[in-house]
Length: 412
Image (tube, rainbow, N blue to C red):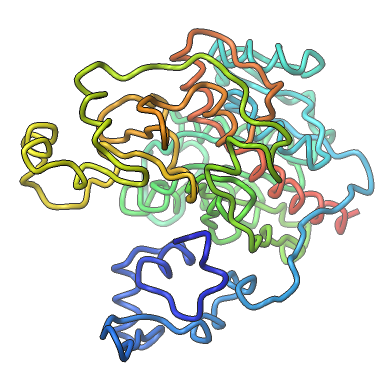
């Protein structure tokens, strides 16, 4: 299991795929071409990877260091950011915890904007469509522009894209704000799917546009939240652009931590939180779904149901390929949560409480995303779930913030 990975001497295909954030098929290809060759385990005959083989990957350095690292760094001066598509504030709060001040946050959703105002009355929250907002007044005053724009496809005219090719997309607006303010560094964050969106052309176009604006774009990096003090198997892609008059080699992504936190760490008193999770509102399952999930053991899913219940619950999906491991899924106390969705009771992505047959409550959702207990969410229950489910985990954002501060310190 993931929380024991650091202690192991041999790793399965799935474990190495998790550690390197690549697909199993990529590992099989590496096996065929000799980049990383699996070996047969004498007793079981399973194909595994020896720990020593993984030393070739810099990002897995934490597996071999005895000392626990820290990404913490103090800012040498005040650093300021503009955040677009700010949502409920997970990224902004994490950056604040690292030591970066938000000059302005843009968010079109009313209830997410209310959440930002409720928790940080001093923040300049601009509730509007980003297309209507100019940030030119911040030119020369901002160190960072960041935001989680959706991965929309846009016109792809050969190998070199210009800003106008992205018109009509939210990435265009992100790039426009970067152009208006020209900060030393800009960071876009997104879901893993961006890497392969439109067969890779979307991200290639984004890189081309930022290059045109005067930014060296580092190779996109997929960060796994579980390695950054987040008790959740969530992944975020970072696109980092460094202004070309600066040394891009001064930036380094946050180093992963050895300790991996589980669901018990999220909801019970311990290292992450100093109290058990507060009682709060939450959704319930319909009676028929509850009857099915009552039969699923902790850490189990639909394949742990009686065969007749499996067939009835899964319907046509029962006969299709694939594991469908998110369906009728009950979480385990001893593992990190699966990635939270915007709707905790929807079929195919159930995230059932490990003991009680119900979805996680709002405050449990927030804990798993490492929001503090005093961070309040506005709007209906469903809107609160959506805000939390879409957020960048606060602890992950803090570690990204340390990397940004370390870079900006070196530039001053």
